[in-house]
Length: 86
Image (cartoon, rainbow, N blue to C red):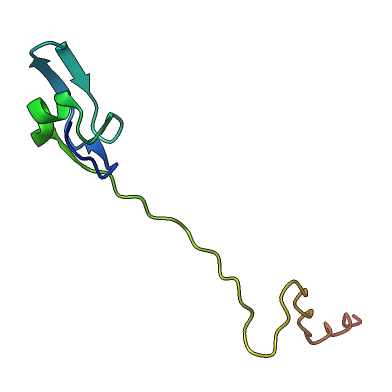
C-alpha cells in the first residue's frame, strides 16, 4: 500500500477516458475529484491537478481603541436647509 498525504485532485480538463478495469470514465473540469492514490489517478492523472482550498478568514480583533461587538457611532451630517418661500 502506498502512503497518501490525503490530497484531493480535481479535473483540469473535461473528457472521457478508457481506463483498464474501470471502463470509460467521464470527468468534468472543476467538478470531478479523485483522492490521491486512487488507481484511476495513476492512469489519467495528467487530466487532474491538486485541489487548493482557500479559507476566508474573519478579522477577530478590533482596531486600537475600538471595542469588539460595539456598534459604530452614527455619522453626523449637516441639517438640510429649510425650504425657501416663494
